[in-house]
Image (cartoon, rainbow, N blue to C red; front, side, top):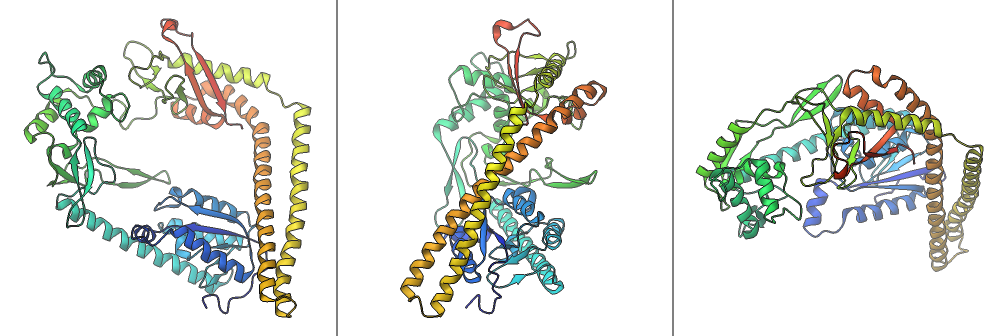
Length: 525
């Protein structure tokens, strides 16, 4: 038996169950081998039953990521382990915890070691305080990384080989095409969607030979032309960016491009940054799909658009907008942008084509935000009634948690006792199974209630702490805001206390520079 010889851990404390799919699991599911997480849950549930340990939290990772930063449930797991309140983590294999680089593996190993948290798998229980287990655990992570690197190289080689054969390897087909499975061979190709294909051809025609009057159009006027004539892309209005994406995509002239944007990693000021610059030397292969435009027309359009384009004013420059990522249009919900102007002060405007929201000067909007924070600070006070209410609510949660913990402790004793009564012959096997199942269901119900109350209690504590700290933060920001020269520094300050801002200015207020409405949503539940 898989668990044979394992030491019983019953009564030691609370455990976390962590479930995550690997790339092999995804491939197995495609072959019809069933849901991986369900199988792993049953396996770990049986392990917990055998070891008679108390699983209080179950974390399911449904996203795939190379690093811990891309896996939110793994981040949550490490946060819980750091507290030292959990005695162990149940996982199918240690490799599920980290397949990232050495820094990620080191973070996982240190977190478990310093908190003294065990790692329980069907094959072995790892105690990080035991030097032999620690070495075994770190070696397992190392081998996992090697296996991951091998799989990744194999997938990349396969991807390059498929592209060289003219096959399409992307997950989403470009506009105008649909992805199809190739007959009698591995891989995929593209098939034209007639209605969308005509729109793509129209875009190239407008940029090449022009409209009805023979006038060649740029990307902005092409977007306007398409919108005016009732064309939509997936139900949305066309934007210049959408048009540009189509005009530069070589799939439309019948080619498959390999390595157009390479992933370049750098360490800047101690932080890893990832950029994807265009590679002029990327490889191009003749695709198996039918092109929508000729190579000659595609190349003419590229030459024309390059002659019209200007290099970005903000490329490789510092942040210029102190309100970046904060202001949203109340009409369409899009994030608003900064528009510089040579003759006038920079404005904050909505990027959505056809949106009726009117722009405002950046400096006026900044001042309005600061004025709103001043009013909020002067008006906001935590009343004695509110403090009393929160204390009472906190005491209520804590009392209920204490009652449930006692109830759970009694149920755990009953659960253990069912095994003793079976061994002594007092319970028949049928009676044991019935009683054991009943007690286990009651335990699961109590644990669920405990989890819910603990989450609510923590939310209440976090909310109280935010209330007490938010006003001093806002006051500090108001006092020192204009002494900070950089837009990035101001932006960091605002983001400490503001979640987002809704901006509203209707067309009838055009010309009135300060006649607009903002709604500020602070970082407070």
